[in-house]
Image 1 (tube, rainbow, N blue to C red):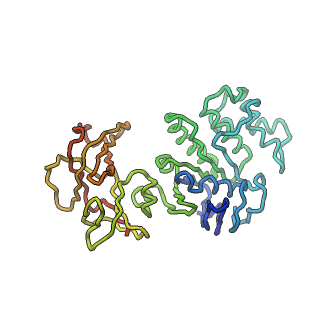
Image 2: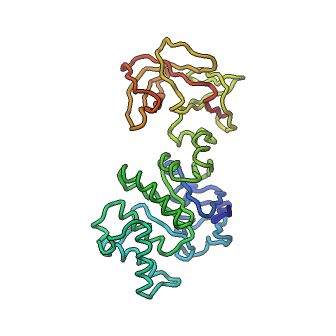
Image 3: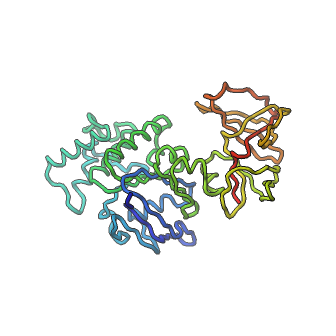
Length: 357
């Protein structure tokens, strides 16, 4: 698959803050890419540099094989969907969508019949048929999100940048819009680069997920590989599904302030040693339950459980004061009841752990 966009050694600073630090990146044609990272990691800055709203101090940006870092944003062939949608409240749905088509600097569409036809086609594509004459203040949040997307798509960009496009929507609508955005992208056949701070959204949306950490691309991988094999403790932490322990490797044992864990799992080279076990790889057993061959065991006091639909997340206080989390999928077994402050064994197979060393 050819690269639609390339960033080569791109850096951007604000005073002493290095927002982007020598970014090397290649995005393919016709793909959905998620960009995940915590607040302050540089996600929005990266999007704005690609769009042309910010200028990098060094490096080059190539799009379709041509350098674009000194080209004005509206001439790059890249669409941008803002987090707050940035719609014109005094214009109708159709007028908002037509605005960029009619008013762009290069090749504006002046024929009214052509504008009407293109707006009608894009309205059908994003599922807004029947709402053309409504004011954007009279439609739902999900519909406004579609208007913002349609306004970008009607200009036929070769790539679309989305800055946390689902952040302003409620949970049910976010879930529906994930599916709709992917379907719209597939019908358009262009690359979407979707910025989010939600690990579940990034994994669900992206054919490929990029993880940004302090201005660096910490990992670029398919969702399943990222979820099962994070490249570093920082990436594992961003995914919010691993219990992480600091410490060091001594022979076949990981030594941490919490305890000593027999090794046998996947080892990943990393600058900072760590031991990680995913929430859903842990069993909760009675304190005196036997430990089987190849298992690792900790003890903790039950604190609370949270029901999240398909799973229950249970929290335990370890002896060093840290909180250990266990995710139990209800499809596997009926929900269990634990005694408040009761002592339990937390057990996992040693080959299920990830060791960074």
